Length: 118
Image (cartoon, rainbow, N blue to C red):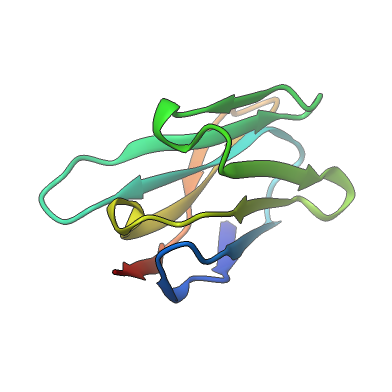
C-alpha cells in the first residue's frame, strides 16, 4: 500500500506564507509526477501545481508568481512554498502522486486545510 502524508497547513492572515510538504511511502517502486490539488467549499478539486521527476513544473494561472513547487526525489517528497496568500486560496490541499512503472497509478493524500483570513 502507498501512503501520502501531508503537513504544513493552517490558518494564515492574507499576505502570509506557508510551506506544504508531502512524503510518499509504502509499496511504490518509482514516482513519475507529484503535485498539489485543492478543493474549496462547493467547488471541484483543481490542480494547483505539479512537477515531473525531471523537474518540469506546471502551475494554475491563479497561483503563478506566488506558489513554488519542488521535490526531493531521494525522499519521495514534494513541497509547495506559498507566498502572498489570498482569502480565495482557502481550501483543502491534497497531495497527488503518479507512480511510475509498472502500475502508473494515482495516489492521494488525506488533505490539509489552508485557511486565509482577511
